[in-house]
Each structure stands twice: as structure tokens, then as C-alpha cells.
Amino acid sequence: MIISSHVPAGAFVGMAVRSPTAALAAGFVSHLVMDAMPHWGTGPNTESEWLPIARRDGVAGLAAIALLAASAPADRRLAVLAGMTGACLPDTDKVGRYFVGSSPWPSRFDRFHERIQNETRDRLPREIATAATLIAAGVFFLRRLAVSTRSGASA
Ligand SMILES: [Zn+2]
Image (cartoon, rainbow, N blue to C red; front, side):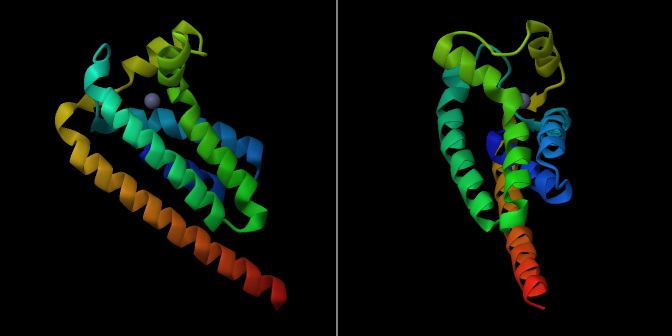
């Protein structure tokens, strides 16, 4: 699944789980659950096919992290960041293989992560729409939470 979908899912986890440590762990689990759902993918050993999309997705994911963190109320920002971090961590296998030639994870975990994928090549448009919707919803709910936190503090 594209990282631009994992990021807002992690933000939702951070909204729900206020402890940064718990948000990190729950975000990590959210990644695995989402990877098991139907999504776009090209399978292993198809770098030339997925790399151009992965580059754009990485930039969009970083922008989404900044936007969602900026939208979070101050007292939830760390948990939201932790949730997003946890939600991205499993895919550091791809980043590690690309930049340094190896995954930071034990090979047993990488095999598990690969085995749970539910990918087909025709789902990219739907997945981009899902990511955009999740990011927009995350920004909406985080801003609403920030407004209610501020008005609650002043009352
Ligand atoms: Zn993954």
C-alpha cells in the first residue's frame, strides 16, 4: 500500500491513542492490517515499475506528515507523529534496500510483510483517491480537535 495511505491512518491512530508509545505500536500494526487489504502493487523484483510511483508517493507522504502534524492540537501532536511514524516503519525495508542494499528488519519479518500483501496492478487510481480522502479527513478531524481543545481551554 502506498505510504500516503499509511500516513493518515497513523494520524488517526495518534488521535485515538494519546500515548505516543502506544500510538507508535498501534500505528505499526495499522500498517500490517492495511497491507493485508486489497491495494495497488507490482509484487517483488519489479523496481523499474514501482520506483517512479514510490518517489512521488514518498514526497506526498512527507507532505502529508507535515500537514497532519501541523493540523494536530499541541497536546496530541506527539502521539499523532508517533502513530504516523509507526505506520511508516514497516516499509523502511524498501528504503533500506534501495539506499543501503538491505532491510533494517529481520528477514523473517520481511518475509511475513511480503506474504500478507494483497496487491494487484489495477488499483492505483482507487488507492490514490483513498489516500487523498484519508489525508483530507485527517486534517479535518485534527483541526476540529484543535478548535475544540482551544475553546475547551478558554472556557
Ligand atoms: Zn508495507
